[in-house]
Image (tube, rainbow, N blue to C red):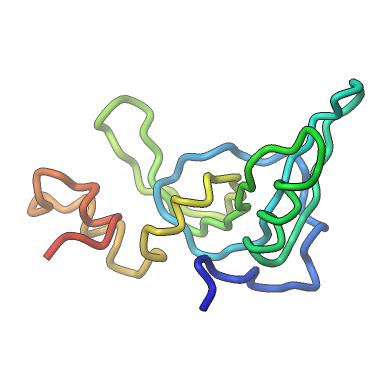
Length: 135
C-alpha cells in the first residue's frame, strides 16, 4: 500500500511549470507529481527531478548529491486564501502549488470542505475540518 497518492496523470509528470506557488491554500484536489529539488554542491543552477510516486522521489532524494526532501505538486481547484491572520476567503480557479508531502495526510477537498470551514457553525478549531477530525 502506498503512503501517498500516485500522480493523477503519469504521462504529464515532468511537464508542469518549474515555478509555481509555494504552499498555502490549505486544501488539495489532485497530486500532479513529486519533486526533488537539487542544489549542485559544485555550484550552478538548481534543478529538480519529477516522479509519479512519493517512493521514487524519496529514493532519489536519498542518493542525489545536494537533494532536498521530496515536495509534492498539487492542483487546487478551490482553496482558502488568508490575506490576514484568521481571515479566510474562498478562491476558485486552478492553482498549482508545491507542498510538503506530509500535508497530503489531510483529506482531499470535497464539495463540503470549504463551506464547512467557513460556516458560522464551524468548530472553534476550524483546521480540524481540513484535517478530517471534525465530527
